[in-house]
Image (cartoon, rainbow, N blue to C red; front, side, top):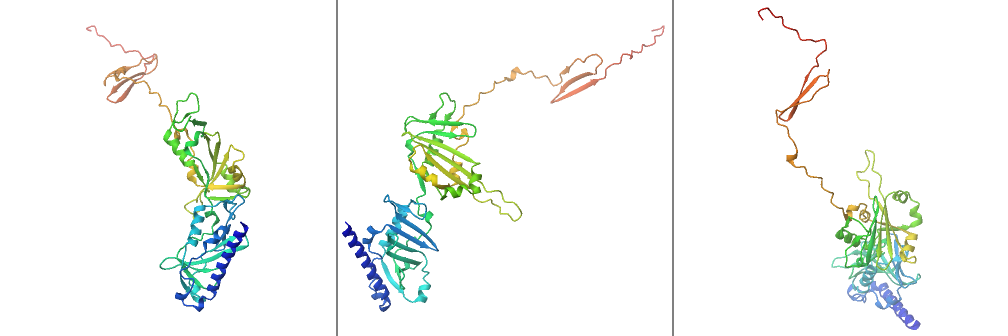
Length: 403
């Protein structure tokens, strides 16, 4: 096995050496006669020996490498798993590319090709480079300008691979996935209470975990909630210890939402998010917008040896505010409340309505003004008659003999 590996490496190095020879002497031939035109960009036989790939652009370098578990990780981003689809696309673009033509060996013309659009190295270990290519700008007819290694002759390749040197873009953004059919129950941490639902199997509807509960779980809303959190993704990541020392982290702990899923296997997954809102801008020259918020995502599994627990212990992940607002905080978001009991109906005939001109009199105590009221249309009119004084006596009329 070691002999076979040695032979492959020897052949690969020979291919690179021959290619270098032709490139160095390309200026002695015409573009049409260049022996590299029409050949493959790289010999695919070197791929079994490639265990490290470096992508460099604008001073940044993404390092992708096979770890001790024989899995591709982003060494330059806390050893997070590599997005293998993206990695496979890059390698395929390089391996399947053809050299379409020789462009130039003149330095002045090469400067116009913008040969700083990214360098890709296929390596065996940290010291041995099996293949190196630096890309320039895209050209008419498709493909990109490139040079091999540090050579001084530019060619045109038939493909235009994406040379991304941002390590964050190489990592898998999904940090936890679960099957919706595996969810047996959910516990909600609401504003005023803790409430939960459960089901006996995936074919049945969710019911309240309380033995007696008039509230009915909203099946469609709960299923949508499960779908939303079945694949948790992050946007950015940093070292947890460093992030915990920031004021943003501290202020975010004042606004927390959480939810817990129980699987039929018995495992529980707790999801907690804390959000920091930027202060409102002040002053005449302040921007109209306060800027985006920051939402931290923390997961934990009831299985002590679960990989997610170790990951969360050393790293701090941020996610979208959409995920934060998706966690319910009010019972009406996940349950239908019982209808309130209707108030007793009062029949119209049971209400005595006085006639418009009916006079309602109320007796007044002795020595008090006499108050009378009567209804005139829609108005109530009060009439007050002053009380009679005790010394006031009626004047008797003088009578004449005739009377």
